[in-house]
Image 1 (cartoon, protein in one colour):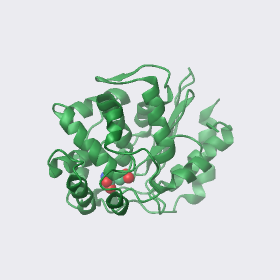
Image 2 (cartoon, protein in one colour):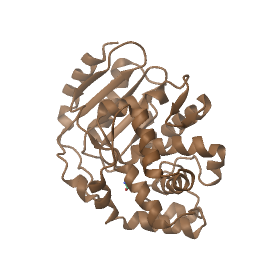
Image 3 (cartoon, rainbow, N blue to C red):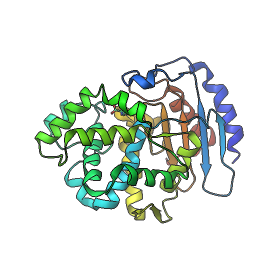
Image 4 (cartoon, rainbow, N blue to C red):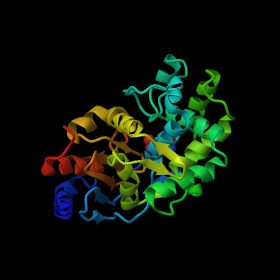
Length: 304
Ligand code: GLU
């Protein structure tokens, strides 16, 4: 498959959507990103070359995509004990909803909503020595790049983190946070601030697509079956309360972030990352979503 031609064609088709949606502004540092950017990169698992188009080498804020790496680290360290502290069902509510968490007495619906990620942050703080460096080492090794936290973006989010602070307090009230709330919030927000470009992100997702090969990066190792389960959670919970729509339109497991990035995998075929900052009302990249829909439609390749 010559993905290069497919990507150029897709770009022509999604151009009409270039001004649709708005970038996230509730994190002040993200409001200053130029919204009129688009990049995509596909890394096939066979010997075909990596194909990219547009701003595929511009780094952006991963935001919630980092929850996939947090989940990989937590499953590696905790195994199935992780599920004593959170569920694995789609939420059908916004990623930062308090209502569901209150109703379910402090047990987050899944690891990819903010409540779940805050519990994962708590677990990593308890389990990793020098958590900031250890987690970064893992993300650097899996992406094959010297990526980093963006402390300016993190600080700008932390200064306005009223809702995430409320979620953390509710979790703590229900006994689902061991560490200090400020430490848990700080580390969660720092994880979200990691920046990657599309090609680095596609490479970092390759081990999830290549699920039959050993997964071991900087001491974080997963069994084939654990990788399969992470992919399943991406399929059912990776797109806020639009996971059903993404599954319907695209048909690949993946994860999006409010920085405008989406990473997805076609098991045993390829990993792909797309970025464009303008988001739809559910928080997913408008052009990113369209591009991936066209990718699986035009190549006639998806998991369905
Ligand atoms: N740091 C963001 C927040 O907690 C991540 C949201 C996202 O990308 O879904 O609001």
